[in-house]
Image (cartoon, rainbow, N blue to C red; front, side, top):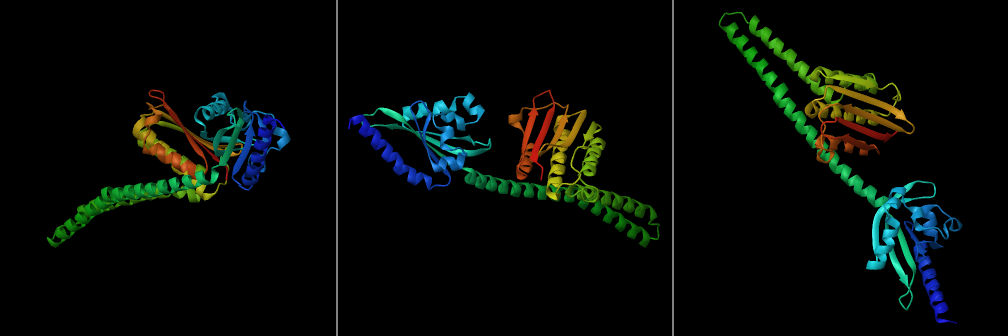
Length: 345
């Protein structure tokens, strides 16, 4: 037996022992590549994670498992080069299964050399990080929810103190004035009329706060009516032109989705009113394929997206809460579009 044959046999034996270990790990894929990055061994863990049978991948390049964007930027080849240079290369990226679906993963590539130091290929281990990513995302969302709840409590407390509390105090003073006039033999009617007007304002303020907390139209008439009400409130508050297209929105969505879509629209309109200086706003909500799309576009002054504030962050977190995503398109002087895409429940 030649030295080269012995080295090849030893390498295969070592690879076979490693196969037994790796096949037992549910979240791991192990495979061997030749020096050019082509697959020459395929294990059960790889089949389980990626969906291919051995005959479908043997001899194909490992870029098969990467997204088109990662292939265009040269990630698969760069991993091999880094492994050669540093003895090991790691990358967190999206891995593509046979059916086209993707999962987050950590990829580790190490060079495989023989006893003489000659490169025989690469070992590539892929670990599915879905569970860890979901746990981290859940923690992040929980923290965001707590922050949002505290911010909402502060807002309500401020509105009650600055609005309702002061109006009730004013009404109390009017009643006291009426009592003093009555005790002095005068007529309390003018002061009582003032007190009635203050109480009317208090009722309107309580109604406004209640509407912001939970719009009655959402429970009584559904999401489309609630969105129309939010648009009407925006028009009255700003004088800007606003249009709503919700005709293609499903008639019945679950309560959580309707509330989130309403809140996102409300937040986007609030941002447009406070910061954009918009003259025209377009709101569109519809179902497209398996997703619900919500778009709020304004012709205001725009901003640099990297410097977006807490209002847009709240929108992004609400979208993530429902398994969706939020895209913000804006630049100074060119208006803003907030686009939310979420799966139809």
